[in-house]
Image (cartoon, rainbow, N blue to C red; front, side, top):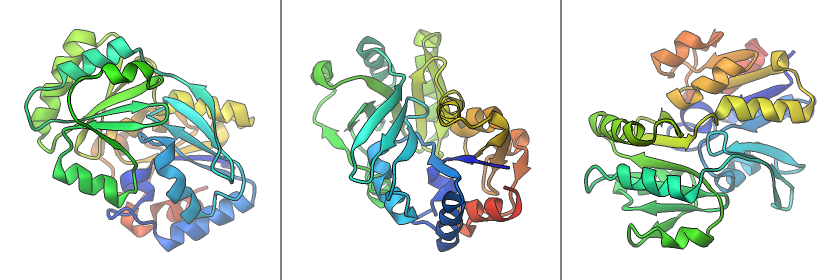
Length: 274
């Protein structure tokens, strides 16, 4: 019996426009009312998930979120108070190296996540729209000078946005050639190239949360669609791919759904497989 569901957000739980299918809301509420834990496992900041939790009705008691691709586990109280339960950050020196290496052309858009804030350098119009649709708070950086990060708290991850897969691969190759022993590379949403500290991913931290909650791996499911979900799908007792998932994700999943993110895939899993 599944007791914990770790779910990606974009292109998995959320519709393409950032909304949530009503059937997903109903199914998740029933699952949690019966004692289950539905936990967003996202590359984003925990702050960007507040609206999602409210829409799902999960903000009435303490709720967990795995954020930053496994960079942190956060417990969020009904009043919005956030308690960092687990944290896996990278050094400022490493973040500065990754940032500099990824500037392969003037159209690259760069995100730097600290524990509490998202800073974006050279944000693109499409990324600005993407952030707005998903109600993701951020601060635009006026320059590439990162000295302000000395007092900004732990760096959770650095990611780059560009629509061209060849540019994405160029960024990936350049960063990993220089600091590949220190970072974990993933891709997401057909637009982002993401770097976390080596050894930290959605799977490692998702199972950390399961252990904290006293839930076995066998009773844990993970649902996703993209390459940064591979680790959690492989780590969980039941790995699930939505119908719109990449072929690489479907190939490693225990369950491949016939429904997409726009067709209430989470509800489908809860009704027919959980």
